[in-house]
Length: 382
Image (cartoon, rainbow, N blue to C red; front, side, top):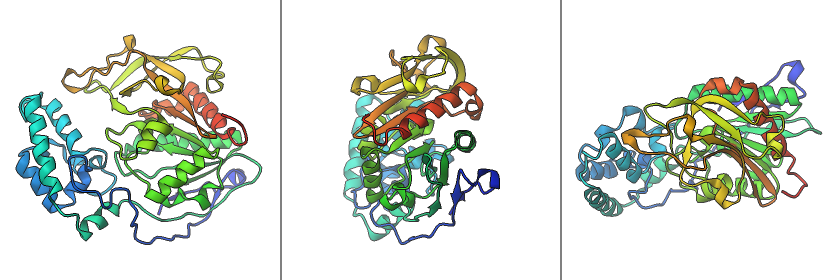
């Protein structure tokens, strides 16, 4: 178990993390434990089942061979945990420019065949154990200062883990907490997302979280925490998975679904524009600035579902194109926004793949404002 701590005398008033006591029994309430195999199954679960993998190899010869090895890992973190079979087939079709499975109709027919054959497979006891192995019930214990905002920096990742961005964000959030006098604790254990632990905190920060990481009961705990007034702040990868198996997280908490980022021209300089200067998260920020990063696009603008847009991207300043010439243009292209969820507050920023951006003073100010606003939801109407 990895628990980060700041233990020097100068920071002892900010954070003290005690060794965790763990109820670390076998997880039995992972979300897809009993789900039938299908083209909507996580690829990692298909790979973990010899019978399911055999179906895919037989019905779609060469499909898995087109995927890079790093996308086929069967131990988390793994890119295979954020793709289902359908999305993987679509990705391969883009990579091969439609040469792998024929026309769109032929691809749809192949998917239907795979789905029907996967659904015939029994879900065995071994399948259930393998599916739940990437979740945990480890419950950390923290000793936090009273009388100041208390933050939980959450870093459990089952999907894609870009270590440089995770580590840079980690360092930035600890530095911001020190500068602001906030209490902060860090964990990569899903067992922290339980009522008894969460009640110690005012806000949770999702540091580039990728992949489904919470059990059914942990999901309920996070939902209840936010709806009852807790804050949530997410950065970059926290809303960057191609597929989600928790609709509340993607559609209600974040309020948008990832559609892609430019490839092969992955990192580009673009103009970020503040959408509403009166927004409390925008205080002290310039009206616009240029920044180089990996720019996310989303299937729909979160403005349409009531989100408060903090900043947008000027699409004329970069080339939002994915593999095979697929356009990622949104027109209205929010890149950071906030939402009210029950009595709680959520702020999400898609900025944050390149480690350098976390040293950018403008972005640090944005993150400071975002945390302060999310924390101040306690006891106030959103």
